Image (cartoon, rainbow, N blue to C red):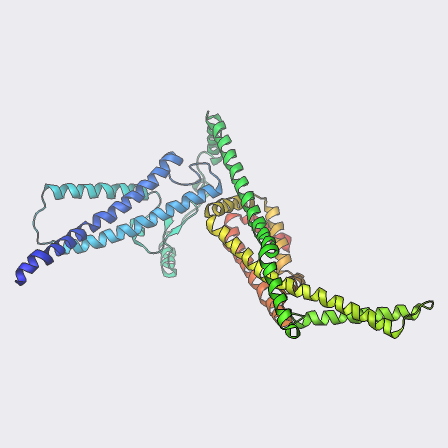
Length: 441
C-alpha cells in the first residue's frame, strides 16, 4: 500500500520538482542572455555598434546618464544570474555524476549554452576588464562606462609595491595624431550628414516638449493647491467652522474662548491700551470740546467690542486655515503620485538647465541660496517665517522651539549643500566648484 501511494502520488511530485530544478540553470542563463541582448540593441541602435560611451556618440549628459543607468542595470542582472547559474550547475553535476554518457541531445544543449556564454562574454568584455568581476558583490561604474571592483587598502598597497617603475613622457601619453583632429573629423561628419538637420529639428522639438511639460507641471503644483485651499476654505471648511462656532456660542456663550492663544490676547490688550492713551491725549489737547469721563469710557468700550469681533474672526480664520492646508497638502501629494512621468521629465529639465549654466552662474546661485538659508543673516529670516506660520495656524510662537530650530536646521542644510558640492558637483563640474570657492573667499 505504501509503495502504491509512493508511485501514484509522491513520485510524480518529486519527478516534477526535479525537472524544474534541472531547468533552473537554463532559465537564469536565458535571463542573463536577454540582458546581454538588450545591451547589444542599445549599442547597435544608438552607438553604431560601439561601446556605450560619450566618446562614441554625441548625446547630452542627461541622455548619457539614462544609457549608463540602463547599462549598469543590465550588467547587474547578468552578474546575479550567472552567479546563480554556476551555483545551480555545480549541484546538478554533483547529483547527476552517476548518470553516464551524454547523448546527442545533451551535447546540443551544451553547445547552445556555450554559444550564449560566448555572446555574453563578447558583450560584457567591453565594460568588464576581468571576468571575475561579474561575480563580485561590489561594482563601480566609471565615467567612461566601464565596470570595475574597488580595491581594498591592502590590495592597493600590494599593487603599488609590485608595479614596475614607468618612464612617462609626452610621447607615451599622447598619440601620433592629436585628438582634436579626430574630434574635428567627427564634427564634420555630423555636419555633412544629410539627416543632421532632421536630427536637430527632432532634438529641438523634444526639448520644446520637455520645457512645456515641465512648466505646465510646475504651474499645476503651485496653482492647484492654492485653488484647493481657497475654494475649500470658502465653500467647505469655512461654512462648517462658522456653523460650529455659532452653535457653540448659542448653547454655551460663557465658555466660548475669544482668543486661541495668549499672544493674541496680549496683542489685543496692547491695542486697547494704545487706543485709550490716544483718546485721553486727544482729550487733553482739545480745549474747545473736551470729552467727559463717561464719553471716554463709552469710546473705550466700543473699541473693545470692535477688537473682540476682529480677534474672534482671526481665531475662526486660523481654524479654517488648518483644515484648508491639510486638504491642500493632500492635493499636492496626490498630484505627485499620479504624475510620475511628469516628475521624470521635470527632473531632466532641471538637470539640463542647472548643468547647462556657466560656472560663474552656478557659483552665484549656490552662494545666493546658501547665504539666504544658512548664512549669517538667515536666523532672522527663519524667525520671521516660523512666526508667520504660527500666526497663520493660530498657534503661540514658542520662542524656545524657534531658537532650537534655528540652531539645528540651517546646520543640516549647510551640511547637505556641502555634501552635494563634494559628491556631485565636484564630479560633474570641477571648474564650477573652483569658481565657487574663489567667489566665496
